[in-house]
Image (tube, rainbow, N blue to C red; front, side):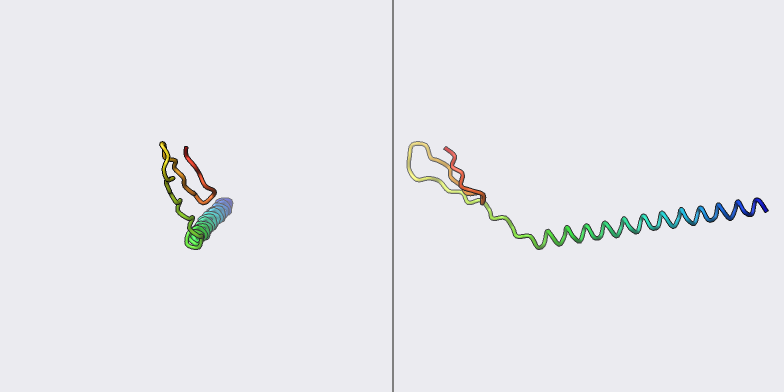
Length: 77
C-alpha cells in the first residue's frame, strides 16, 4: 500500500513537472512570436531617415566642406 501511494505521488510529480515545462516552453514561444512580429512591423512601417546631403563651398584658398545630416548644417573648416 505504501509503495502504491509513493508511485502515485511520483507520477503526479512527473505530470506536474511536465505540465510546467510545456507551459513554460509555450509561453516562451508565444512571447518570441509576438516580439518578432512587433520588430518586423516596426521595421516595415518606420519612415526612412533622409540621406545626408554633401556640398562644397565655392572659391577660397582652402575649400570648406558643408553638409546637412538632417539635424543641422555642419561646416568643416
